[in-house]
Amino acid sequence: MNLESHLIASLFEGIFLFDAQARLLRTNPSGERILGRSERALAGTPADDLFSENPELAELVRVSLEESRALVHSGLEYVSAGGKVMHLSVSVSPLQEPDGTIIGAALLVRDETMLKDIDRSRRRADQLATLEVMNLGMAHEIKNPLGGIKGAAQLLKSDLGEDSPLLEYSDVILREVDRIDGLLEGLLAAHPKGEVHFEELNIHEVLNEVLNLLELSGETSDLKFSRLFDPSLPAIRGDRNGLTQVFLNLLKNAVEASPPGSEVIVRTLIPVGTPRGHLISTGARPKGGVLEVDVMDLGKGFDPAAGEFPAPFFTTKPKGVGLGLAITEQIIRNHEGAMVLDNREGGGALVRVFLPLNKGD
Ligand SMILES: Nc1ncnc2c1ncn2[C@@H]1O[C@H](COP(=O)(O)OP(=O)(O)OP(=O)(O)O)[C@@H](O)[C@H]1O
Ligand SMILES: [Mg+2]
Image 1 (cartoon, protein in one colour):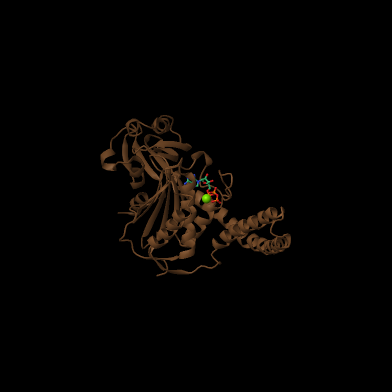
Image 2 (image 1 turned 60 degrees about the vertical axis):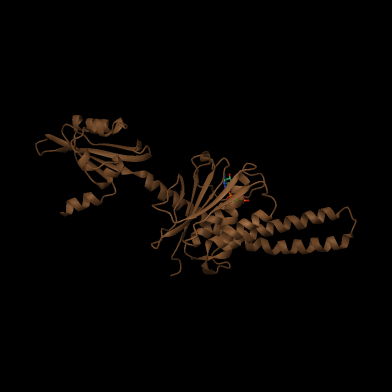
């Protein structure tokens, strides 16, 4: 292959070369991916048939040939052969002989869906970085005066005597202080500079521990927890406390979303192919493969109207704080893993956690 052919073959953009009658002469692998068919199968096909589902594209080629001018179009919604909607930006230029005769047109197509995913992931990382600064600074600053309040409330309580009607108030203070304290612990736990200890561990041990905890709590007695574990999964290197927190947060969300009497499923597997979801958070993609843990419920699922990945402090729950997913994602990123939020086809949320198999090697 010569340099030009190499260049065309490896371009991220799809290239379509048409003759003067708008019939396809050539395309490249990106173009084949966009059309879902091979160059060989498509050569000679008129633009109208090639883009029968997306007539704007055929129209651009035709206008460019007829009027001998270049055209650009961005934000074009394209329905691929598989029914997937892609966002494309396209440009088409006429190909001319030196004497001005039109001999064809070149259509350049860029799939912006992928760029959008990358952009979204970058924005997400920014959000988490902000959260991390808050973790460090605020959690620390709040914990100290909180200790003072707690101590004072305990002194008050001991001074009040067994049957004082004011006892109720001191108990409220103590309980709420504990709640804030728990929240701050959560924030600090998500921080990589906190107590993080990587060790070899069996992910099923962590999952069983969290599931047992939930089953024993008594608040989930009307729910069925199903474990679909792949027993052949290898051990991973991970932070046991962090991962416990991850699956506790995800399972709590699943429980909170579940209608009474329904089922929460935890599944482990070695995934095939690249993880994609409509709400995607891309972490690192490790070389040595990943294992996947899915947490599924039969609730209403994530609300697509709420946008992309819920931002830190986004909550739809009266008593929610909106930090569960942000903390979860931070811990997973510290493991160089990734998390994908999705909905199941039959309804209900599907959260997919990917953890590298070779962490620390
Ligand atoms: N399994 C799920 N099904 C449907 N929606 C979910 C699910 N998990 C999370 N969500 C949505 O994402 C929001 C954010 O979740 P997140 O865990 O971050 O915070 P929270 O559960 O509201 O509060 P907390 O800080 O106590 O966890 C939830 O309020 C809910 O709207
Ligand atoms: Mg939550």
